Length: 350
Image (tube, rainbow, N blue to C red; front, side, top):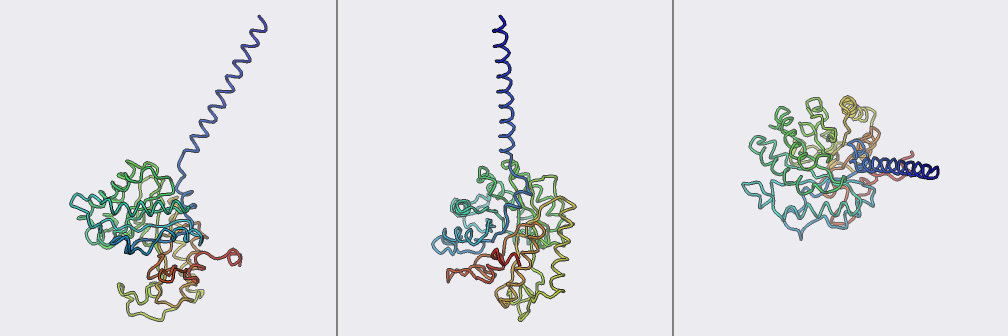
């Protein structure tokens, strides 16, 4: 009788241990399955580059500048994300029902597949800022319909695919219109992607100065994005689409005054980010090729290092045109800009 009791006691103890271990493993696996938070995602994004926005691929796949090999080259150069600039409103087969074509999605699928295959996080950025800025009310339903389709299409992608609701809200898309619109778009995304990391930025072309007028929902899976092109007379000198089209010869020599101006701007964004507990992604920065190379490299390096010092991730504007870090006709990196963006370990210690 005594042996039977002891055996039963051992059985109960073993069963309890098994149950406890099972519970521990269940909790551990549940935590492991939890998607990373926005701050972690922002750290993972690291350094990146904008791609595809103005590539001929959207008109003719055979004329594409961006090839599969470039995703590998981007990763090997030290970048960890690509911001994929999408113009869904320009889909030639987009009809009155706002249904995106199979051909348009084929290109996006290709970009996502190749980014992931090369260890790059991919930000799907709706780049229809001009259309939305010109007629925000008239294009509202189209934007929401586009996000309903993109969200459904990529709902099963892993955490290294992120969504950006709209690049550079501007012009007639004021904070009064943008703040409720971003919430409506986010609701649509959350219906199929409840924990997908989403990027959203302020109006006035994602200006740091507009951050105080950005009204976000409580959703904590958000990264806030800002853009930076100051001083504008330097970064956009000779740009035919701007007020600086006739400006030439502006240098950036990293003087104390020039550096302090950038530090002051970034400090404003950093203060806002701390107050609102939001990570910051510097989604665009760059200096047009019409500036002198030494000045461009100095400015680019200073902006990138300041962003990193504050714990921001970033994506340079842009890979292969106008502000290029990669010379597509020569199939070679623009080395001064590449080194400014991703310095060697030795130069980072200096």
